[in-house]
Image (cartoon, rainbow over all chains, first blue to last red):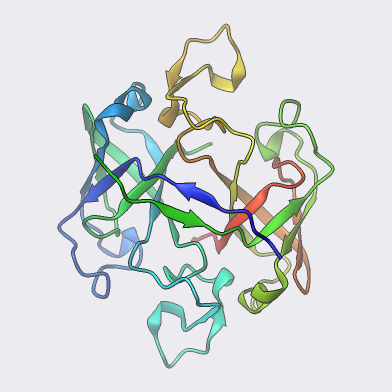
Length: 133
Length: 133
């Protein structure tokens, strides 16, 4: 029986025209709009070398997700057979962390504009890392 | 002032011959060994469709990391200038979540063998997702 737990402290929040998780695109290449990552002011030093053009891995906490789900219908399509959740990208999963590949288009202090993000407005930001080539 | 917090409940643990974070390779393509992801027994339903050959994104909690760091010397090389942590892959960062691309080589109930992982023995597993193409 595991008893270790770790606390995610969000480092900022997504500003997006998307507001409804049910109707939002499931992946950025399905029509996610541009969005702004608004970092907490006290973390802006961590963005010192983040530049327009960077391709980054954005981690979010999908705060609308259910965490008690181990089998899901892919893409919420009830006509498709259930699959083990770890072979899907479902938001509903034990630790609902979103992994998004995004390109930085502008940086203005704590505000980082990115191209094509499927996360909804108000989604907590967990981390940003460069994509390795 | 943000006050929201989220709790990561590890879903398993990494078994690896790597034991020392300081001497472990920084990225899997720098010599990470094969490793076994040991999932908690009650989550095995979530692995129902995970198969040898799958390429997956593995998320871990880098439990040895410091969380109070916003600038780091890349690759712990003190001769290189400090950079904002969000433009590096440093383990030390506000939410120390590791993102690893790994290939599944075998699945045996809750034990998933993967090729080339730089995480050390005992690292908590947070999530596994398929790589999108």
